Length: 214
Image (cartoon, rainbow, N blue to C red; front, side, top):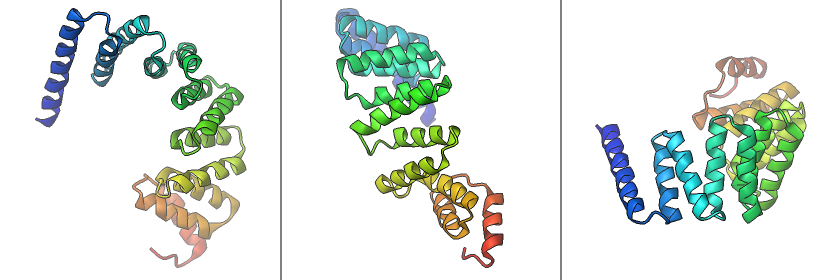
């Protein structure tokens, strides 16, 4: 029933926004809000149209460019995603979400150096941006630079000590390095944080440690 109520509320919101736009067709914020409602409804074509209407009325609406780029990312329209987020940066060079989105699009396209540059720019502006730092760490792992990835996961924990994914990935790297004790400590933290840990890895670590505390 709760889901049905949410769907009804969303449908009502969309109807009200459409009615408002019918009276105020040149209000970019109304088109943007309609796009966000369509995004929640997973109606991506309608969301794209509404975002483009908002941008036609206000080309400097940074959040509309970023969300349009995010929509393109979901559809794997990678070049369009990069272009939309670059448009956001043209209006606000400190838009960290745009750098992160560009990095993610570049990473999906296999352009790892360009992706790393974009994630680094995001972190230059906002060092505590967890998603950009996690993305950078994963990219570094793809490039085979496990040591630098390790550094990035550690930095994630400086800003968010309970971040379970970072604990788990540190456990994996530490296990590969032969540091079973530290691997076990991070493995337990990941497990406590609700991360779907690999039980086989846990058993292997415990086998090395012997009677590991539970």
